[in-house]
Amino acid sequence: MLKCIVSVIFILTTLSAKSQQFNLADYNTKAHKTTQTGMLVLSGWAVANIGTGFITAGQTSGSDKYMHQMNAYFNIVNLAIAQAGYWGSRKRAKSSQSFSQAVKQQNSEEKTFLLNAGLDAAYILGGLYWAELGKKHQGEKKYFQFRGYGKSLVLQGGFLMIFDGIMYAIRNKQGKILFKQLENIDLAVAPGGVGLVYKF
Image 1 (cartoon, helix red, strand yellow):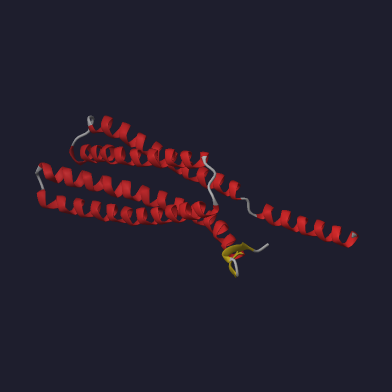
Image 2 (cartoon, rainbow, N blue to C red):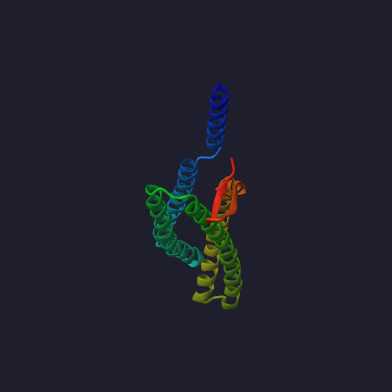
């Protein structure tokens, strides 16, 4: 009897120790906070560019005027995307995400930041192309427009590439902790059917 009690205590202690190593609720909280913080940073960048862009565009001329204009217009879209991401994460944080939902969200965010990094590179290349294209219109209004828009795209693309790179690195690190739990899951086949078994 004593041996049985000792065995039960040992098993319960082992299960408790294992469960403390990974807590899904804690993981979800950290993941949501990371996303929300990132979206607030992006929102701050967008608001700063919109405000200074429109104000400075009216106080400058030449290519600088068009650069600030593009900064403002570009970041109106950035602000909309950032706010949608922020409130979407807030909404998900209020619900209790299952393990499979957490995995799906993790994969989705990692892919999004990688895809965005590719788009950021395209912005930079497009900006360099526009700036070069402007040289063909020396003395014309298009010269200043192309040069200004080009400089803006290089600036915005550069910032977004750094931002998306950092966000991907942080979320990827968090994802490794989540995906490591998949090593403990086996597919079990029994006479009554098929199921998933978590190995402690």
